[in-house]
Image 1 (cartoon, helix red, strand yellow):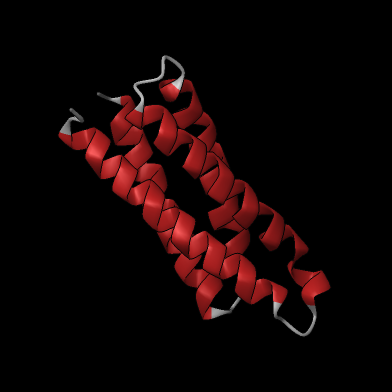
Image 2 (cartoon, one colour; image 1 turned 90 degrees about the horizontal axis):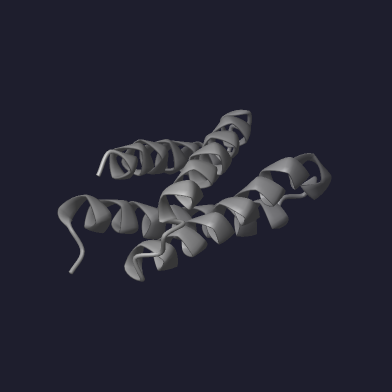
Length: 110
């Protein structure tokens, strides 16, 4: 059974995946998509590492804590990039990525 901090981080990871996917799709639909490439790339990286960490936590992987550290770095970079753009979806993604970072840090304290 998952402990409360694990449940909290999984919920945060899931929300981050949904929001980063949405941000990526919205960026791909932008008229000047070339200006959004870094954001798109980091959104994708964010979705992938969040998904991987979620599964690692669920199956009690020995590497979950190490993956959480990588997830923190990717989500921080994604938030930083998203903050550069005025689009609502980017700003919201930055906010959710930052929350995910905080919850991953709490998970590391388990």
